[in-house]
Length: 92
Image 1 (cartoon, rainbow, N blue to C red):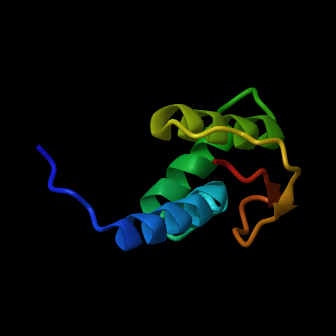
Image 2: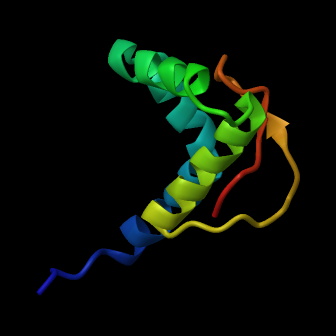
Image 3: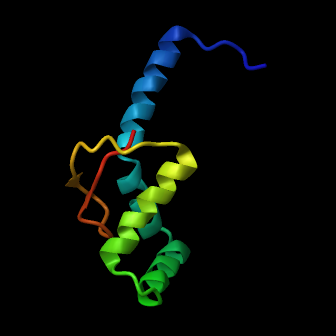
C-alpha cells in the first residue's frame, strides 16, 4: 500500500505533470536528438522507411500517447524546440 501524499505536494505534482505532459512530445524528440544511438536509429528509420518524415513524426506521439496513457486535446500545434520537428501538439 502506498503511503498518503501531502495535499500540497499532490497539487504541485498535478500542475507539474500537466505541464510536462503538454511538452512531452517536444521533450521526447529533444531526448532522441541528444542521444547519439537513438538519433542514428531515428535517422536510419527515416532512411529505410517508405513513410514520409511527417508520417513518421506523426506516429511517434501516437505511441507515446498509448504508452503513457496521454490524450490529444486538439488545442493546435505549438512551435517545437527540438530540431527534429517544427511543431507539436501538446498532450494531456
